[in-house]
Length: 102
Image (cartoon, rainbow, N blue to C red; front, side, top):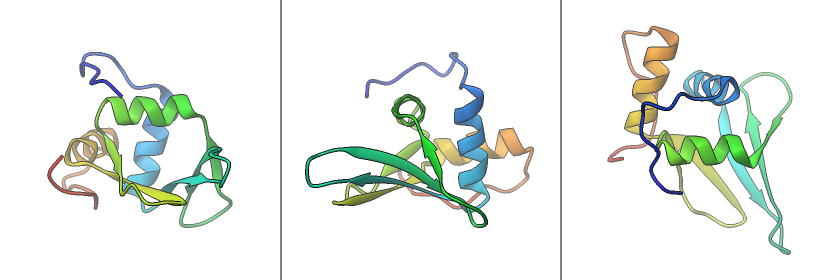
């Protein structure tokens, strides 16, 4: 997706996803043989949560997450920008785990 300027605010659901990723949840894009893609957030505890493509697209457009581009299941990680956003949202003094060089 194209880059979206940071002055636009994240949706509440996108903020929740960032916080859950920072807390250890895993975001995966499951793709079937016919090309259907489903985004599921797998928290450390509890059931998986289905996400809309719009939320994932917003996080990608803001460059807060990036995937490892694997088939059939790609895993999304927080970028350095995503780590900064999570730190701001959680009012944390240290950054959560994430990918590098984004």
